[in-house]
Length: 205
Image (cartoon, rainbow, N blue to C red; front, side):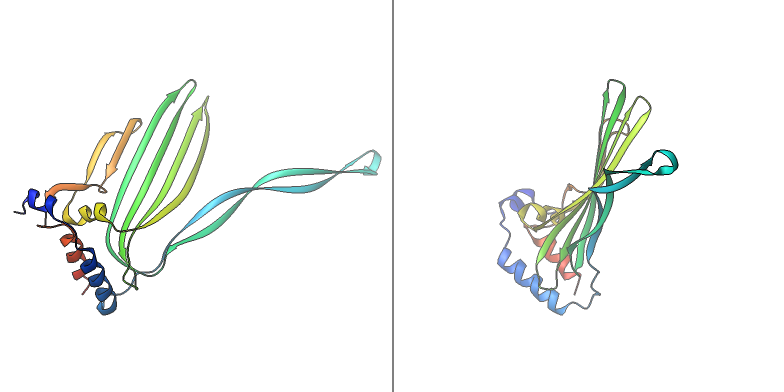
């Protein structure tokens, strides 16, 4: 059984981990996965000219400028081809009651720890935010997408060094509800920081 005190006193050997990641990227025979991307919709204000006819037989015309919101869908490329080392999910639901209605916000997170062909180790998060507002029987809803990309650091190492567990707290539709396997569990799997990541890389060879 790994000793927690010994683990906490250890320091990740990042030069060795990065060198090993580059070696794995060169030597792995595992098929590479496709790029990570997503579609997002934005609304742009577009002005249009409208001709209105009036008078007998429509003899008189008047030009008017009107504006309207038009959806524009774009594809966002996050990272290119890669090997996934681990994938996790996390969800947060927030419910509030207001005079005459309710307001709900749900954030979905998809976490991917990955190795790029150049040996870089990245932590990619895709976010999907759902907002629904109900007031006096009328419902307004929209969905927003975003992402983040960062280098794997000491904090993310815990995701590999500790047991992967699923946790759920709260009740759907009331207050704050969370669920998913984003956070590392309590059971330590290795004797030193970074060993879990090294083992995940080794599985690609």
